[in-house]
Length: 178
Image 1 (cartoon, rainbow, N blue to C red):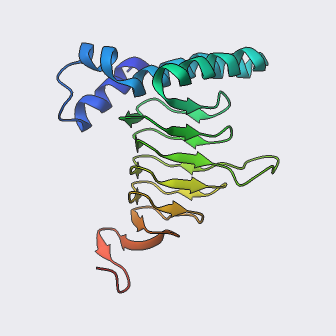
Image 2 (image 1 turned 30 degrees about the vertical axis):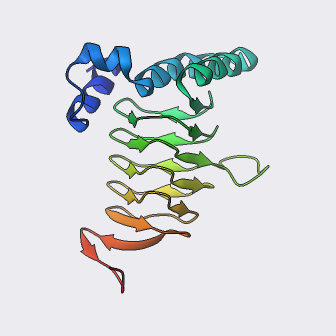
């Protein structure tokens, strides 16, 4: 399946408001930002760093979604509502991930090397969550709205709060959380 088809399909599968592929392509800022990122990332890998940054900033202006050209993003990622999303340079996002508005996948400072999160397959990152540093969000994990994640999240876990704490693993409650 092509990158375009994969990204359109995940929107159609996960957003009941999406009626058809044409509507998704024309009206969803996440699709536009991810498509633009493919070009920015291509330029980044070709060492055309200034051009890559200028291209990404132009699309940031149009979509309100900031994706650093160095970030590695697989196909089949769904950015819903998008506004205010920030994705840092060494971020890695795998297939099937859903990101909602206001999410930050950020670093912790001026460290060199891997300094941004890795988001594994089918993770869901809720609105206004802040995932900071080179942490790993496991497969099928869920990060609750406005959570601040500074530690790894295991596969199939749900985390909430500031700082984020595990409240479910494999759908079963953990600890004394309601």
